[in-house]
Image (cartoon, rainbow, N blue to C red; front, side):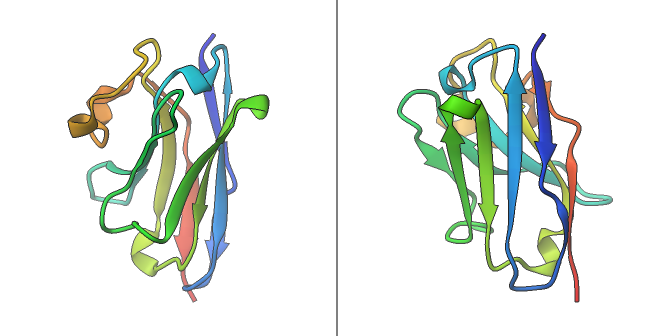
Length: 129
């Protein structure tokens, strides 16, 4: 059974850091694309990071580039999202998702939720003083 479980969210002050984890079970995540998304109240779900299978090519939107870093620990079957220099506008529920059973996500649609079939339950990130 394919399952993704996020953890690591919480309350942090502006300028602070958090590291989110996405633990996978039921498949080997290094064989598939993994995306991180976020959704704030009243807004559409937004892609904030992607890591490809095998080569580990990464993508970020301009809004988080240079502040967020996605990485993968194949031994733990876990993907991480390191978030630095957090801003109040980063407040949202953060989700990870996988392209399983498709190996890859085309570069032009990595940030589209429809490119992913399996999702975690989400973890809340609140950036506030």
